[in-house]
Length: 258
Image (cartoon, rainbow, N blue to C red; front, side, top):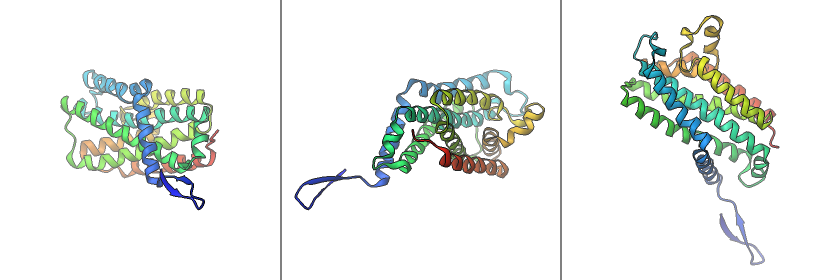
């Protein structure tokens, strides 16, 4: 905040520039997520346990490449689901319940600044997850395609955008208790059967045919193609873009601030 002189000699406070407000809100949201034990388990502990399970059990023996090389892209997709959808959805839902969203939306931060701060927090936590999962994967023998890393990072950010939009849509339209149930249930279903960890081509029947059109399946396929083969899965990217735009428009239209 800066001080300016009013005509009558009194001092008034003016808000900091919008980028500064967004950065401060993003740092606050990030620290809140990392201090919350439940969020930390969801963001770090669960993906690590899933990575170890995939690498040290025969669940991925039939995919044709080393377990860890298939497991790491799937776990990175799971990290985006955990942080952007489940974690942010639950946090936003309870902020809405206790009036935090309504209060902050009337401050100089505004609704735009609040949403941008939440997105910044998602990206910050996701970056931490990528570092942790990447290091653990490397210690277990993960060898990603070098060019694929340049493709995989923006694909992961796009996936996080899609799941953030979906998380805000759920958090802004249903009760917080329902948000908690829906986001946790979808974390399990999309993580286990949504094409993130196991490619859709290895899932049975109709489920396998539907998976590429889900945000989870599209993100999993795009990351595997990038990190395994160094190629861009244009179809999966289009699916992610459609989910991002569609969920974003729906959230903007139906989001309730109180």
